[in-house]
Image (cartoon, rainbow, N blue to C red; front, side, top):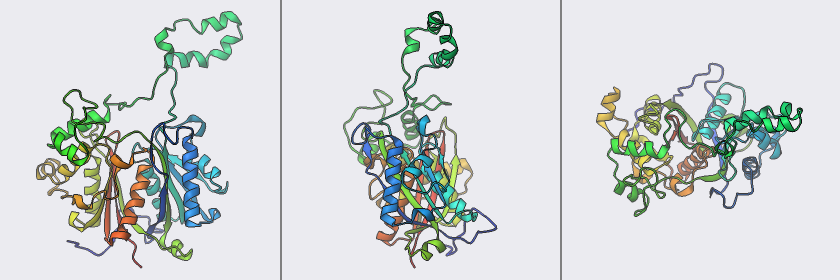
Length: 399
């Protein structure tokens, strides 16, 4: 039951606290499995196309944009500030500043919430926020030992052949082998699938439940031979990009736009990466619901990121667990998610998960669903590597 019709914001900016933040529109490129339709494109190309598509769809004059923010995880050193490069390539004026953010799978969530904060602080009225990822062109580098040798190469080469040969001294064939990007967490040394398997055991999620959520009869992908996570119930490596148009309500109406949703509250959380790596959605959901004085029954649209079926189901069980709430000293459980209202347009397991682009997809999808389904509130939630998490509450724009 809705206990308050007020719309409190947990972020307080004294100079502009009464500003309403709205989602005007959003787009995404079709997400695609790595090394398929986007295999010849760079990440900056994907993000540029997404920004251009958003500008075309909304007919927004690029000169009106105050700021551009993009999220990404796997960075190419040539385009380390991919937001700036993509912005310029999309025809946004050179005078419009931009920066890139990274926070694993919630990178574009950070971009969108940073946009909201800039508007609340009175620093902007129109911000384009999105994100991108490509797994078709990841940086593959030499070992650290070889890199150190190469840094000293210019000096060594001045000594002629003897100097060149000195670069090889102490190197083995193993040292010369290229290094693929690490998929394990740096601190824990563990891949997400293993963490999700352990989380599933803790919250009693069976292989059958995961397969009911996805599909049956595939071999375990991480913990062999008895693990529960398979290629079907794990999100696949994906190329893609997204972009969202975030404005102050006043500016959106001034320009003649009909927004889709208000951004009412958001939270970024952290938990134990050794035991609860992917449990961020539970912590984030509690924080947002408490801040808004809402409970799960008030939510009509759920968009929850699906890294793995086990991760999603573990979070749903944790949210609905009196025992877990008692362990955390919360007083009461977060509540039960109505799965008939969750990810009804598809989630990361079916659509794919370009790390830097998913957060923007969640916002656009939730905003559009609020309009289509005539629900009032949407809850977004996502986990991220490092034991991080994000949640947000949107409200349908109805004027």
